Image (tube, rainbow, N blue to C red; front, side, top):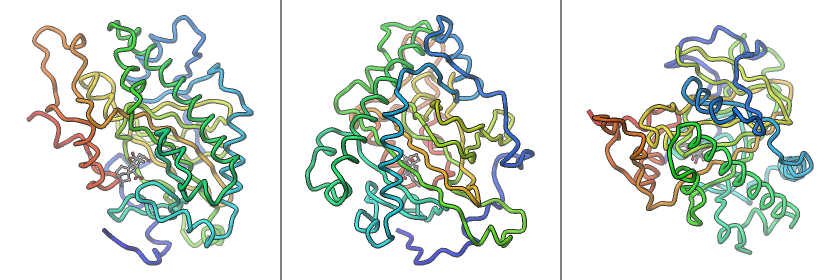
Length: 338
Ligand code: GA4
């Protein structure tokens, strides 16, 4: 495990990237992100197209109340406003709990503090969970309500994907998250402003909030406040900024869904650049399979003579590999057939 006692500001600067250098700045917004209205009869086709082209889309008319979202946002903010020593009592992350500036345990750093929770009901209801023991009961309720809403949205989106891909049964993808042992998690990220940058110390360089990576799970649902920072990498390797929208959700295709669709959907590489003057808050639900789930392409998707592009593995095996990796690593590489 790499321990950085006090990372200097240089550790957070964006230097080189395997993607093409960004041609847009944080403030130039990309207006090509597919917007899916979940009540549109054509949503299934639009979702499939978005997953093939971007591995990413925005969801509107999702039916999740703004009050439920704001409740969790306010509870999270209340926590992040506490003094450092109090917050540290809910950490360090193991990988769950409160963390600051260090992401994972292999040396990744970001200008971010976060709460990472396992969403398994047995874990959440555990009275001794430090984050809930030392914080108000209202945080626990807000988390539980939010997770319920995210699960429902994931099921709906995954069922629309199955419809759009014309595969049966309809729950062929959603059953993976419907499994009561589904290994999912919720992350609340707070990207604080950076006073040093405000004084011009970075000479035009960007401050990394969360370095580039793909999400390992099936799908992730992200909601942020209205502060920009999220960028995705397009198929041609360019980084573009996603216009923030605090009333909508953004869905990422994860590595597992890439395998389930035998590469038809691509897990989207993304990152967050911190705003130097404004605080950004995001909440992400990562829908993952049960530990014992075999991750193989859906049989009915394999056309005549089409072979799986991947070796067979379980989520447990992938998870082990993921915790031994760094954020920017191409985690699916070792699981590809050569
Ligand atoms: C990226 C997506 C999710 O935030 C996360 C992250 C996890 C962690 O913070 O513990 C990892 C990262 C994420 C993939 C590689 C490893 C593990 C940090 C890291 C360097 C919760 C997840 O599931 O994978």
